[in-house]
Amino acid sequence: MKKAVILLSGGLDSTTCLAIAKEQGFIPCALSFDYGQRNNYELESAKKLVSVYQVKDHKVIQIDLRTFGSSALTDNIDVPKDTELESNKIPITYVPARNTIFLSFALAWAETLNAYDIFIGVNALDYSGYPDCRPEYIKSFQDMANLATKTGVENEQQLIIHTPLIHLTKAEIIQKGIALGIDYSLTHSCYDPSATGQPCGHCDSCQLRLNGFLEADYKDPLKYQD
Amino acid sequence: MKKAVILLSGGLDSTTCLAIAKEQGFIPCALSFDYGQRNNYELESAKKLVSVYQVKDHKVIQIDLRTFGSSALTDNIDVPKDTELESNKIPITYVPARNTIFLSFALAWAETLNAYDIFIGVNALDYSGYPDCRPEYIKSFQDMANLATKTGVENEQQLIIHTPLIHLTKAEIIQKGIALGIDYSLTHSCYDPSATGQPCGHCDSCQLRLNGFLEADYKDPLKYQD
Figure 1 (cartoon, chains in turn red, orange):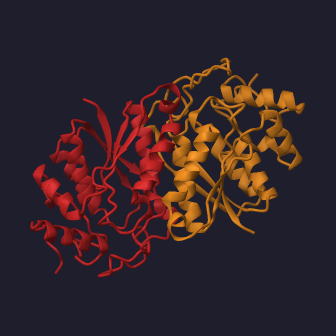
Figure 2: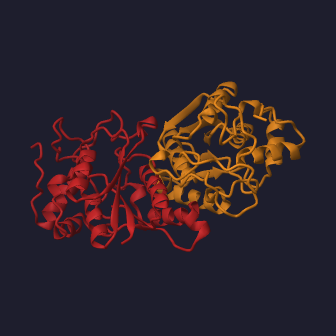
Figure 3: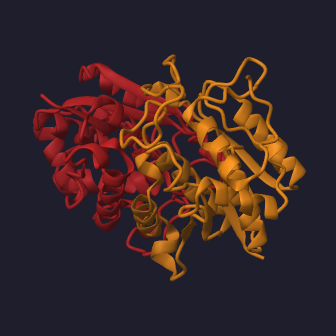
């Protein structure tokens, strides 16, 4: 069995990604980030998930993306509610270069583990319009990664960035996850939860999640604020 | 005048890079890392340099690359001394994916600054055989960066990774820096300095530096241990 590094935020997508990596026979090594996000419920979910799904190797990297600012996920900027999701504009919840930073750490860990597989739960259909969720971006990161490390110099094995959700709708992701036995009550998606961690039901992330459950014909096990 | 993000370690190369960016008319925004390196003299040099060269914007990012281990620069592994530099083998001082992580943070900062220029002092001639110092790696990172950010989606301006030293010998770098008025006594290059910060004179980095000064026909202003 080969090891794979799984980027695990604790949200619906990355949790499904973890289950898919396990289904494909990889030993998952989960990587999460405490990056100065305004709420820590997602990270708490990630910790619960690795415990429930018996992931032996879990690292939480401390980085402070508030240093650069300019996102509603890290700064004191209002999270937009009930917005039109089909707009082509990049929303204020976008965190500059976040996936590039996360994948760079995953690359560093993969290299020290002698692992050649990284999983990231990006999705190009029901997503929030972030540039670093697009297939052409992921392909380009993979090309770069294969030049960045010892792998690219000393041997022929290629590193692969796996994106098993990239062409799925949110409903299909949920159906896949339920088929793999995921307990979605353990996951957290909301950008702007209450002080006790209850999801708002109105931010982009909640809207995508709720629409996904509706379309998949399952009930979201989370309790929403209203 | 346009802003540019300059990766500034406090070593000879990145300091020369800073001077070149200023010469080219950029407003330098210097980015340094406290990444769990075994000695902090380089970072102290970076702080002195931004003060002496009046760089107004300097950020020091705290990340802990010891989390992943496997480098003599972060772990309790002996730094090799008096080694043959022409070998094609990647040395133990290589830190997995370090430049990829550094450039990813530079990309995040550039995006929030609305800057489209990043300077990194990598060098493909007199270097230590690191995969992430090669021109093909840098080109590939630039391609990826242009897909990773708002820039790649919302407008046509391309981000450029500047590598003004990439095809220079260490002697040429030193000559260029002296012509630009750099005081190299403020820089630090040694991988394994004494407790008081004196360079060893025998690690790969000291050897490259000393050979560079010899070839450039200047005296290195640093005091070595022997």
